[in-house]
Every structure is written in C-alpha cells, then in structure tokens.
Image (tube, rainbow, N blue to C red; front, side):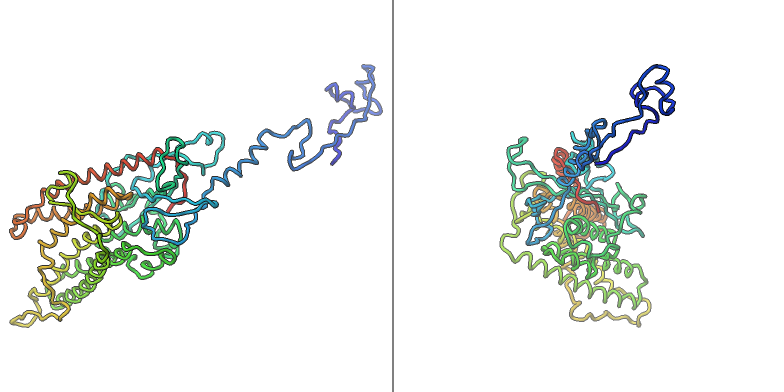
Length: 501
C-alpha cells in the first residue's frame, strides 16, 4: 500500500474549483481576492495494488478486457493440437490412424486430395471476429477438383511437392445431424507437385520449397511427418522419376529403411522399394540404346540385362508373397457397361490397399517388360567392330530368358489387368489421385499401340487400342467425379491446421 501525493501545483481550493492557482504562500492571490479559505493541505490518496486489478484505484477501475485477456490463452491452449499416435504403431497405409489429443483418443480416417494449394481458403468462425484463435476449427474451400494431368515434365529440376495437413473431429453422434461412423474424424492431406501441366517445375514458388532429401530420412520417422512421407510424397516422387526415367534418391538404402524406424512397413511399401530401382535402370537402358552398335554396347546391354533379371526376381518374390494369402483377388462381373467394354470382367480385391498395390505392380511391369525385351535383342544385333564373319553371342545361363514372356501379347494382358482393377480401387479408396499415374501409363501404352497399328504383327490381331482409350477417358471422368465428391465432404466440415510440408 503506497501513499501518493497529488501532482496539482497550487492550493486545494483552486484545485477543487478547477482554476489556475498562482501558488503564492501562505495564501494564494486568487483565494484572497475572492475571500475564500485557502489551504495547501490535501488528503493523501492511497492506492491498494493487487495482481487481480493491476493496482488500479477507484478513479481508474479495472479494464473490461482484463478478464477476456486472461481467458484468451486458455482458449488457445485448449485449441492447440497435440496429436500423438497410439501404440502399437501400425503402417501408415492403414485407412484408420489411432491418435490421442490431450488424453482423448480418436480414430481418424486418412484422406488425401490433390489441389492447388494457393486456392485453399480458410473460412471464418463466429469467434474469429472478436480476436479468436487461428487454431479454431473453420471451414475451408479450394478450387474445383480436376483429375491430375500427369506429364513427364522434369528436365534438370528435382521433383518437389508441397502439402498441408489438417484434422476434423466429428461431433458426437446425433449432434448437428451427424451419423455414427467407424471413424471419429478425418486426417486430411491437401497437396500439389511440379510434375504436371497445371504446376510445371519452373514455377517460381517451387524454388523456395524445402527439399525432402536435404532434411534426411530421420525427419520422417514420427507422426505426422511419417504419414506425409509415406502416403503423399514417396509414391508421387517415385512415379515422377519413373515417368521421367530419372534415378531417384528414394532407392538408396537409407530412404528405404530410415523412415520406418518406428512404424511397420506394409506390403505396398515393400513393392515401392523395388519400383524405386526402375527409374535408374530405365535411364541406363536409354543411354545404351542410343550408342553405336559396338562390342562395348553389347557388353553394356548384357550387364544391364543381368541387373534387370535381378530386379524381376524381386518383383516375383513380392508377387508370390502377395498372392500366398487366400482370397486376395478374384474375378467378378462389372456393375455396368462403362466398366465392361472392351473388357469381359473386372477384378475385385480383399481391400483398397491391395487393389492399389497390384495396380502399381502391373504398371511397373508395363514399363519394365519392353525394356527387358529390347535389351535382349540388342545383345544379338551385329556390331561394327566385331570379328568377321560375325557369330551369335552365347549368353550365360542366367540371361537365357524366353523373350516371348515380354512380348506385346503379354504386355497387353498386363495393361488389361490394370484397367480391370481401377474401378474397384476407385470405389474403395480415399486417395483417388494415386490412380492418375497408372491411368496415364495405360493411356500412353494404348496410344503407342495405335501408332504402331499399321506396322503389322500382334497389333492387327488384338486391335489398335481405340476401345481401350475410350474406356480410359470414361474412367478419367469417374475419377474426377470421385474427387469432387470428396471435395464436397471436405468443404462442409470444420478443420484445424496440423502441419505444412
């Protein structure tokens, strides 16, 4: 408790009258002239200070915002997300991820959608107008979903991907018309990458994106960074490398093991480990094919064919393990004519991830088998610096393969398997963009078949691929419709930002 004398310079009489005082002593001139009692004695004012009112006296009551400013940090603390994945740590490809937030456990459905991140707009809540926290749940909106227009557009630029993750917690069943579902909310990734026409690699904002490679595999061991790497970045980066036929750092052992230090690997993760080896192999093959027909070129083709056989054995091992379980896939009649013509039937699978895994397996074979066949015949091409008369080279036992296994007939069957599987995967998945690259590869294959139609051979027997291309365009429309349906669901819910990558 502190006594504070008044700051007014003059007598108390003039002060109370609110007039200027000459401050003469012992009596001021103004009081003498007006015949008033002049006094310099003033009661000492005591201010009682406390933490609650900030030491403010009765003439200066506590501010009205004091109570609100005290409550604001509490609200922000309650709104801040502290998600921790519940043990045991399951593969990131599981449709549901179990997390806890401040002691409460939730089961979240994982969903991933491609969009232009610059178009994502966070709406306002009723509390935002009076200084609410930016961590509050709010609706979002973004550009109308379009099927990703995949293009092998990377030259000397590295693949880049940006993503934004957010969470929606469903209200209790019965509130706001909410129906009870298996999940307690949604864990959503919105992302874009620079391997498409819509967002080419030379756009300015890609130059400032932090490189995943620079951060290192140890940065993606824990949630949510691990789920971003596994479910968003890795397969997109591998597919970009595959389409551009450029080696990928994701084939390095550190990147096939490090991010899974705590989480388990799924069967699909093991498949991607092998697919990551293909871009470098295809790049070496392209360089070999363009060289002059010399003995050195023949030896290079022979060495590369040996590597291809080893990679093929890894694919065979994966396929054997994937089909060892009963009822993994089966044949069923299509639901409508759109999914049927020109295919007699369709495939069904035990779950959506298995469907996607087999689609990616066949996609890899569709790109890999023509390379193996061409390498095989390259070895037997005549060379300009060989002995005369030239003799056919004798291949070692491990390279004595049956070239018919990699013929156009077998490759067309693989392309057909992809198309027969796409509709099942589209219906079941919450990540429809994963089907864009297999669709692009199949379309490229059937377009190539059409161009080679007049060359004779198997193409004249099995058709020019026009019906298959019509089917692919119809599926592209169904893929876009699935994406827009997911977008409508996303835009009517409230979201909290979690992390950006």
